[in-house]
Image 1 (cartoon, rainbow, N blue to C red):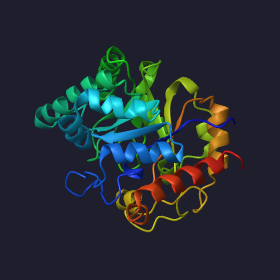
Image 2: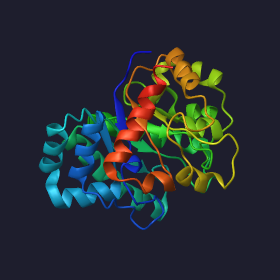
Image 3: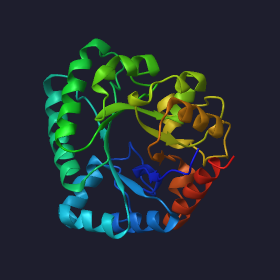
Image 4: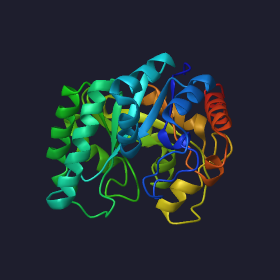
Length: 282
């Protein structure tokens, strides 16, 4: 497999910030994170909704775009839209977030918007198909795509559930996001990944971790991820499977862990980049 562009996910360079720690805003400025990512070799970077709103207020859309462009960032991703398939108050709040994500994607040329299934775990898959198609159409109009992440602690627990939602909407402007962590924790084999038609794969993310689960899945996924090559996952085998599936896009690097949160920004950028890049040569 040829060496691809790598994207630093928001949490990889967020520093001492956690998904369930208030707003999860990074103590590092957006400019500092982008510059650190560029020095390390990354070609893209991510933002959460709260981070995005914060930085729009600080820099404006034009300022954010100028920082990305000045540092050679080809890819900008926004995460993670929840409850896009629901109704009532959950949907009303989600629609507010959705509108800003789509507006920002259009103004900033975002590569993708990440979305997730039901964290409560019980929303019927059949009732997600039409809302996903609508979301994909809106993303296409904004010049971006919608990457639905397979997360074993949501109702989109595995490949089959994810494929049932994306269906034929996953042509150019939608598809699945397959993170090696969640592929392993969902019990999905790499052989299954290799059989997914490439048009249904919107994004891939890399990290490493222990073979056995030692905490609840959600908590483990934000505290125990390792640099690629430092855990028990067979990252080169996963890359080979993704290659057989026909995926040719950039690769996200998502290292959520207490260890990575304690690293200085430049160290986090350098270590996450070099350890991931090494896996493509094995």
